Length: 320
Image (tube, rainbow, N blue to C red; front, side, top):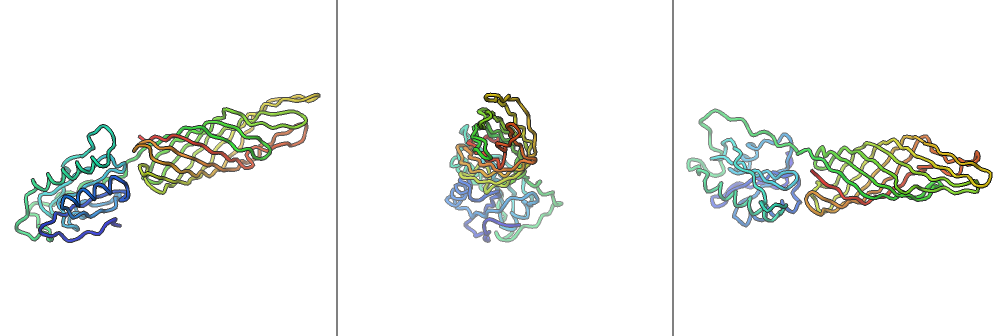
């Protein structure tokens, strides 16, 4: 088990407290550690994992109180035992209580909850503070491991396709849907709907080109969703459908066509947090299509769609 902090043996005048968190660098985690330290508690921060044993961590750090900060950072669960070495029991869930996410208020309420538990817990006078007390009763099961909460995010915003392969620039809407398997790894769905078609011009006529795609992929992020700054990179595959409307000039006759190809893409993004559940996101997409989608006038190729595909989007992303 990798710890984010180093536990210290308890002193007679200091109550140890264990804090389990997915990320020790979030604003709420930093404020929580500060409030607990101000309250006279010896804080040991431990990295969350699916197989984490709360009882073992509490005994290792000689603590009777353990806090579990939720992956979203909006609630804190308080676990406590009567004496060091006894099984922890869930006591209460702490929220900011302000109707909105407030890291400062949440940390203060959690410190007050820890103080209340410390006053009500029966002291273990028969054992030194650094030695776990023996249990006379049959061992009780450890609390269930706290898994990373599965969450879904959706993004929507305007996109601009840069002109490549002889096709002019166009505009559309980019829609994304993500399932966060962990705080940093996501499975994604991605769709682009054209609004302003691109254009191709030649002596034989013109064509309006409207590429759309629907795909799936995966991404990995630099930090959890509620971090102030977050970057991610992903890849995926999609079906690209391009509708072409041709208009001939002089003796040429235009006609419409629908082109279908496979698209393999890379997606890089950076986002800033607006609230704990809402972010402003900038995406850059690049990919190639196969087979190539060719625009042909009078038997002559004048442009190739998606050679390569380059698209940029600015979106709002929400988590629930």
